Image (cartoon, rainbow, N blue to C red; front, side):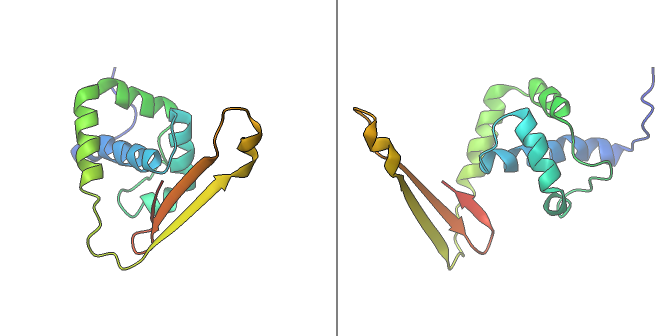
Length: 129
């Protein structure tokens, strides 16, 4: 049975790439599940369109799951590590650092304060933390 959606060789080549790039961006922003990645895609569609055409909108959570089930976990981890290592920012002039301590945690016996630190790279609009 043939696919009822017309596609070209170019669109078939780009489809997995845009799904992986969308998922990678979502994970770097703290999203964890396939549902989260789908939500990220819908919320960031305008930004994502700078890199790939999303003529039919962003993929569903089921599509993201199918794509990642086809990938070898070790290869994916290796690629992810390479990408993160290459995100070293050499030309940034301004990185905003923010830290917070959750003060309500001290009441729990044996627990220390929860500290969260994040860094915002202004030029690239990237946050890490």
